[in-house]
Image (cartoon, rainbow over all chains, first blue to last red; front, side, top):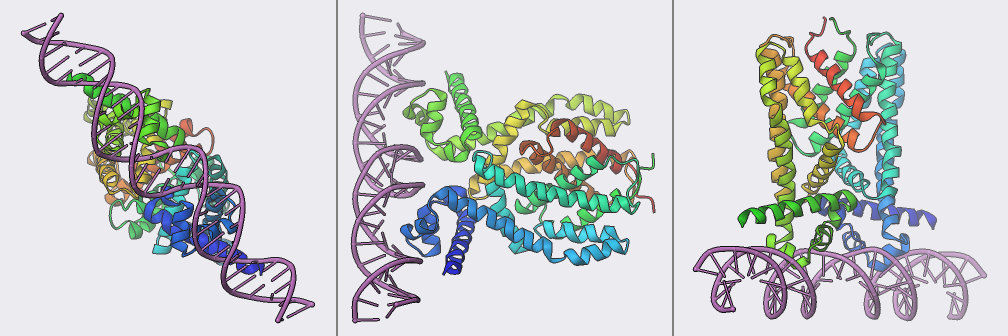
Length: 205
Length: 205
DNA sequence: TCTTTCTTAGCACAATCGTACTAAGACCGT
DNA sequence: ACGGTCTTAGTACGATTGTGCTAAGAAAGA
């Protein structure tokens, strides 16, 4: 069955994630992943012809999980925007992106490892760029939704605000992953809401 | 001469940086670094008894470079604060932290690689935490200086603002390194100044 | 039950890894 | 010129790496 085949590949991807969290991308050798998955080396090679193919699949699988999470509350958020509360919609969306529970922390750890590996591996860099563009568009949508409802001051440079929001999100994510300023998970949401509140008010000057 | 000895160690650290930028921490093997430095394997081992020692030294050397850069304009900034222009002082300091030229981008690339390696290597994690605490204190000083001059609204939670600024800095750094939104280097400064301006005005209502 | 296809296991190969060790070279005070 | 210390080079060892290849086992349709 072809279904079993894909399920196996996903199981192997999950084994890759566990190994990466424990030993880094360095430890994600074919043998290491096989051991983690309880399979032999030859079996892994049956499902993935090469190590690169294995790692790229595992990387894309992280993206797929994130997309599912983001898609989940999509309808609710659209309703909020239609009701004029784009601020609440933005908060709900962006809190989905931040790693605020263990599962998302685990995913983000793996993603960060792949991201840095992409500094050296052009194949991974390409995958990362596609995913990052997706996040950027989400940030853009948040700012645009707010602006179209007149909730963002006109004197704001929208491009600057989009990239500021985007950078803040990635910085918060990094800080949560590195466990900086201990109560990060709960405080990250507070920081995000403060930022969105700022965005919705003009600079008095 | 003991001086030559330390100079050699620094040369080897620089070789480590180049290898890491080109091939990642993965490629920073004893052999690889020796080849990059134009030395034999045995020579590297003479200056560093173990690979871990070599990499840790190279990591601390990145910190040392950053400290020199930050220390450089220190007097000027203190003068600005004394004159009541804490905003200009903050902008000058924080722009030193961002990788806005090639040299600092190179350093930040290496630092990021070490940082992620620290996810798996407790020794590196310790070094990273010390350095991160230093950056946090710089952010704290910026916010505190502004607040003591009455330039920050009282209704701001200072802890939140410190970590928001800190996260934004790290996020901007990451985006510059990953080359997101092409004209990042020039735009990063603009984003930082926008953020500092926001910080200096109360949230109306 | 036989046969064909799908999975799994295991070994072999060359390459690379970190470390230990030895010996030859360079340099310097005397 | 000599003696001793500081540097460098080179080699060897066992372990691990990615990949190619072969054959045994499982599953399923005839």
